[in-house]
Amino acid sequence: MSGFARTLVYGAAASAALPLAVLVGTPLLVSAPALGLFAVFAVAGYLTLLASGARQRVGVACASLAVGLAAWLASGSLFQLLLLLSLGVAAMRSGVLFRRGAARAAVVEGVVCLGSLWAAGTLAGPGLVGSALALWGWFVVQSAALALGDLRRRRRPGPGDPFDVARRNLEELLSG
Image (cartoon, rainbow, N blue to C red):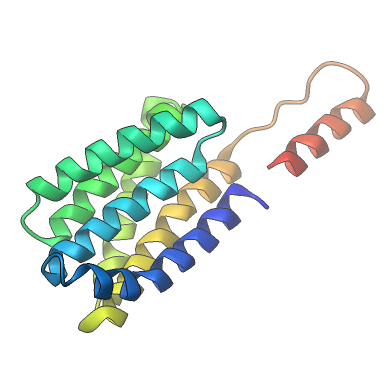
């Protein structure tokens, strides 16, 4: 399964789990902080899913949880938290996980950040179902960053036989 498909499935699962997590967390916290805390852990899981090796997964999980919890403590509203989390995801995705050129990363991540906030704001509604839809919309647009990166990646044929070049391109496509 490609990274884009995995993140779409993860976003749907996180959105489906949100009402249960908030209902369980509300006796411990007020509803809004429980919702924000769930978003922090969901985003940390999303970034960990994108990491390639075991060491990178541990580092990404620790870093994203630390940044997410700091954002959770610093934000005054759920929108501010999603904005800070979007910026953190952009920095982690383009700076650590998938190193891209600065100009290209700024354009792709800027569009994805604004798009994910727009999707979350558009789909947000009252209650837990509205919050779950908002989180799902946020994840769908964040997953699009992987599709944008894959579509814009230029494949340069290597030297050699055209059949070898085609085989390498096919292996790269199938590997994810």
